[in-house]
Length: 603
View 1 (cartoon, rainbow, N blue to C red):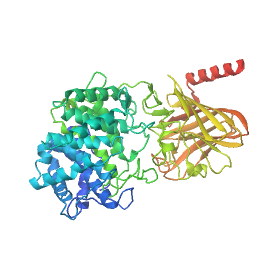
View 2: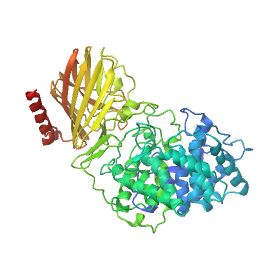
View 3: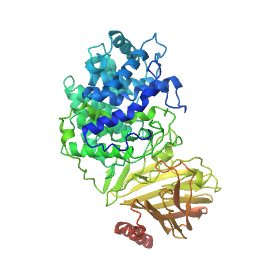
View 4: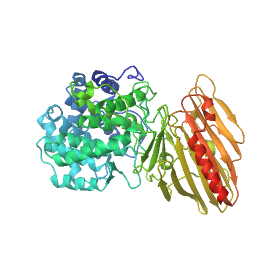
């Protein structure tokens, strides 16, 4: 079975409906006897196996629910199985009962989809259950009103449950709903941007805060027109910024945590269409291209088991990059992308032709604390973060604080900090006292974002300060590191990690001024300008990169005695495979170097 959607062209509503079914059908034989649990693997998560199996059961509902709302005929066999699972999972007398929940419980997360079903498809979802099952589902879900949730995107899970109750004519907690929206409002910055945790902005803004907010705006338009209009307006405000994260093929920036949710990356556009979010800024044809283009890219990747089950990982199965809350069923959060199936076939979203969104060559995203650049061919998007950070999850420094994140090359996470191959320090300046243990940028103490550059100040050791300036231009960027150290240091400045698998070998070229890897599938290289001693290409440990399981990494090396130093280099990455482009440094970077040289002469 394997990748059961690889041949789906994903162009029409019928294609999208068929894809949703194709993704769920392999799960049917894996349902438990009572159909309330799914055992998809034996890897562990922070919560128990029985909760992980409940999670795996719940997540396919993110596509089953909109199919019910949209009258999709293909969903009937799936819904028959999942309806039985709901009846048994919420029955306290059944062996597969999902149990009594506590505060900060993973099952609170999964409750959201049941509230979604009650709100979007009350007749097809809730009232199709037996009277006993309706009562049991209500009682099981209502536990969320007497338990505590994390004060982040989790707050929306209780909102969805309570609006589901409301729209099914059931008792709901109005006071809780009011307080939850007050909490959510504290996470709003401006210009459509919400943060999940302080200092941490990532896909949780579009695929969580806005996704749930747009569901609210869709179903509560008549009951709460003011808040519904506000939530829709905020989503329209942020839409152009999110569109900048996708290249012309639909590939999205890998950045931040929870990337195993894969094509949830474009789910925002699915709910934006659902909420009638077409505007002068982003119309239905552009939303459709962003959503379906992204899904097509994912459907071409080896992200399934032989049985057709989605795996933990990103571009391929990979536990190394996962968070502690990634259980075997967690990747099915990706099915949130199918919200658009609630729209009937005659809706203009389905009848518009796909068209590209005209994205600027350089986008300043102050709330994300990054610049987003794209190549002239629009086949490569690179994000340059300056001050984003995360503390509580695995590989936070690699997922938020590298110098560059690429739709072509992704990024790498370390297996160890102990050596350069184990650390896989791509798009990072790694510093070491002993040549064994290495440190990269983490939690910059100062940062600034200009119209064409970012600056960050960071401290890898006591007595060592680094000021990094990055100037992007297409698939190039200029890096300048000003380092003051009270000890001897070794430096390794890494470029983009490029796949080393293909039908022919990649060509490697290194000398004291550059490090270059050239292959038919791309070029990754670095040119030294000042301060480096040699270029080399290392072979990082397998499975460190999110996009390719085996990579090559260009690196520029330097020795730094105590004192003040400046390292300056130009970094290039392209999917074109044309090595000649590595010799064509953009005029803008030459101009910046000339300006810097003139300032040095004056000093």
